[in-house]
Length: 436
Image (cartoon, rainbow, N blue to C red; front, side):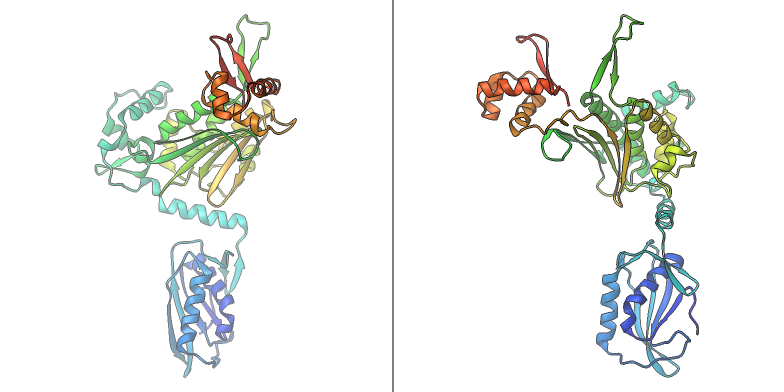
């Protein structure tokens, strides 16, 4: 008996840590294998003391050291007339880690996985599971017909779907969203009436997550929440008025290209990791806008690679992306991020990303109007009142903040000078506009 890609030898349980690394390496390559304690590298037996507590210690250390958890068979076997411990293990929930490290078996050695190899393994596992196309217990009565109809109208209007008449069942079946009378996971996420996704929308007063000017949580399906996201962003970004002399009409231009924002918002829903409680989040700070979706970036490459190179994208949720593509909501073949980068470069907007194990965030920069100094606590309070109620009068502000009339006058003047607040209309009939 010799070592190979699915078999590892250790002299004693004093090498249990190294043995656990070998288990993980073998699982990540072959999903099954065996580990022996009491055999030397050359295959000869090595006698050491084995008790019941020895087996328990091996079991406990495997439990503590390997993630996700496995349930190996651990027993005493006789090899060449000498007792040894055999650990028989298997598992398909790759990638496995040993003490936070990811390794893979090469011949009879354990090699640590490079970051790009680990990403490939994680992505390929997600695609194998094909979560999108799995059936749910929901049926066609659980579809929001108005959302499905809106999709049909958009898709036919842009020419990506033929006008053959709207039929709910036919449309769902054609796009792999309904099978054997049951909706797939993709069908529920796109058009379901059970509010399967949560969207959190927050406006912060500064560049830090401290003072909240506005916050709300919305539940719905993908089509509903895309619209809610865009409405929230359009309402809270800054706009500048341009009069170029070529037309008597003034032109309003957003600080960040809306096409770029929409592309990223839609991608966040198309490429998210679904299953369980799912929450998307859009945070508007004084110096940036952050768009976060559950699940790490679904590709072995980084977003920067797509900014500068022509690369084929991998889709975590193929069925969802296919439907969004039909109404021109999602670019194909990785062109979306490249378009976002180009639009932001033209608008002189910096774009960056944060890729974590559990979520992915894209951030758009914006000019920080607090850069000359942080707002005071009193300024935050007054700004929050007008954010909540644009028709608030001074008495409302006094009642909600506890500040004096003179102090409020001074703060309003300061907020106007910082371009954070302006009065629209007359003192009698106008209202306050908070400029983030």
